[in-house]
Length: 330
Image 1: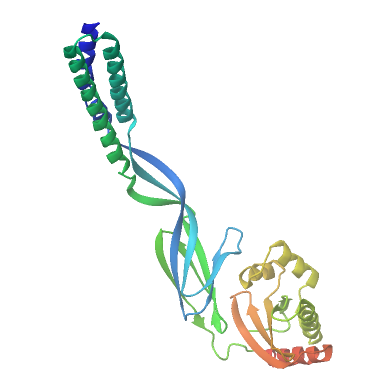
Image 2: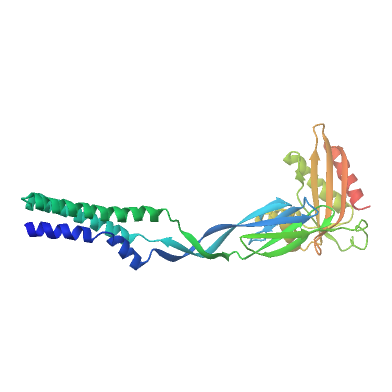
């Protein structure tokens, strides 16, 4: 048994740093392929500032909206290579070191009958413990080494987005952008000519108007009543309109809440123009009704008008609508 004790004493120090050696042979880092979610940031500038910007989604609606200048965050899927630390062989070497120490102590307890044998065994145990501490120290140091990317991150999808900007008195601007994780885009809106609303630009005999729901402030019943009165006044003036039921159903089916998708709805209804209306109400039953006539062929606002007045009863609403339409179609 003394021979076993001496051999164990010699074996334990010989394992010193075996985990470090084994891990060095196997390699300390591993490169893996990674696919994950990230965010692409797009700095959108509009000229002039303050235009409403829409990032179109795959259904033609607005996936996100903002007001220029606007930093849009687009969810994307990216692919890249990552270098990660490896510790498997180091951990196994550390375990082997401490198993050797435990074995040596057990053998010494059973086999040694002299001080010399005990001294040799204790020395071997200390050597094995030192070996395990070397591996443990290396492991702790290695855990502090974080993984890092190898090469750039590449966007897998979506690789391209479309932005549209609009502002009253300006023609809309649209642009496609090839996505990067950090990119910028400038949308230049062209001012409409002052004399744009002319008989040449608007042929009353051929025009078909899609009258959109009234947006803005005020109770729902007031805005619904305004839409009914607006449509009735338009028809009474000799203009043709798209069927209200079909218009409302198309807007509802498309989940359309923006003027951008309303353009597509108007075209689907075979309309030539959109009639948009917005209502502003102050606390004294005074209202401002803004009308905009949009040419669906160019998506440009060809005429706009604002009428102000009381709106506390149906008679006042009729007068407000008549005033606004009179200004829109002089």
